[in-house]
Amino acid sequence: MDKYDRMLLAALLENGRATYAQLARQVNLSAPAVAERVAKLEACGVISGYTAKVDLEKIGLPIQCVMELRLASHGNQQAYEALEKIPELTECHRVTGDPCVIMQAAVTSMGELEALINRVSQLGFTKTSIILSSAVARRVPLGHLDSNGKKG
Image (tube, rainbow, N blue to C red):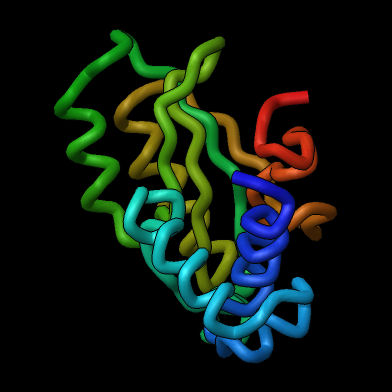
C-alpha cells in the first residue's frame, strides 16, 4: 500500500459510492489507474465490501449506548450465541480486560433500554453508558503508514 492506496481508502470510507472519475480527481490519478488500484484492493481483501452509513436516530432509534458484559466464564459460547439473537445490538466484540464483551446498541426509548439491560444482565454483570455524541466516527487508522505503506 502506498500513499495513493491510503488516499483511495480514505475517500471510499467517506463516500463508498464515489465514481472512479470522482476518486481520480481526489487523489490526482487517472480514472483507469484508480479502477485498477481499487480492483487490486478488493482482490487482496483490503476492501471486503461496501456498506451504507445509517443515521440510527432518523430511523427511530434515538438512544444509542455502549454496554460492557462480564461473563461468569470467558469464552462461553452459549452467551455469544444468545447475544447474537438480540436485535438491538449493533456491534458485539469479545475483548481482553475486565469486561469480556463490549457491545453497542440502539433502542427507541428508555423503557426499551431498560428491557435490553435486563436481558443482557441475565448473562452476567453489565455496565451501560449512553452515547451523547461521537468525536471520532468509525474509520481506518491509515496515518501510521509511511509513503511506501510500511509502519512508521
